[in-house]
Length: 107
Image (cartoon, rainbow, N blue to C red):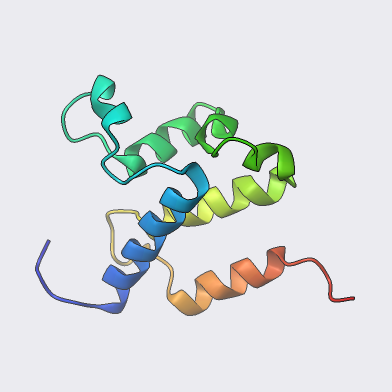
């Protein structure tokens, strides 16, 4: 919004890319038009989480590949990366830490 690059802007961008990868939709996908002007992937993810419908967010087959709890956690993380308040967004170091907690133990 300020046309300035910052770590917090990078976190926002990372969150949007993560949402796109999880859902196989673009940030401004045409399927969002039924929700009204300005509706985007961030608003869609927030809405589905709030309504307890997270399963609907994920690309075909991804939910079944699971584990479901980890998928929902990654969706939550992506949404947190895209909150409006800069002070509320995590740092990339915090994002990496949360993602590492989801990794299966090494063999």
